[in-house]
Length: 67
Image (cartoon, rainbow, N blue to C red; front, side, top):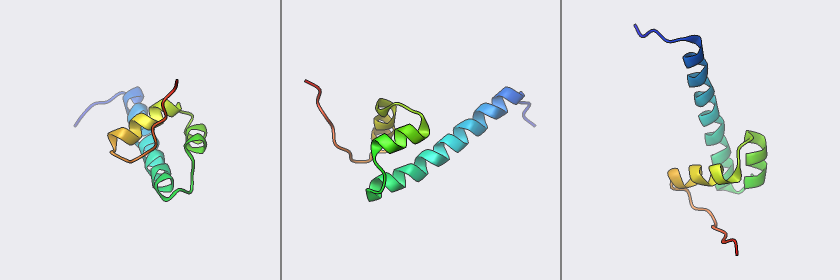
């Protein structure tokens, strides 16, 4: 058996539920039912982090250039 501390268990659970919620939001994003701003506000993450998740999962999105 693996011995894990309570903190390690909490981190794993937090990551699991975060990923689960992100995947649910990604499905809505693909269908066009939820915008990036709504998702990032709901998840409490930055838009830059959300776009990194999109690129990691190879989901198409618009890229905006700041000038």
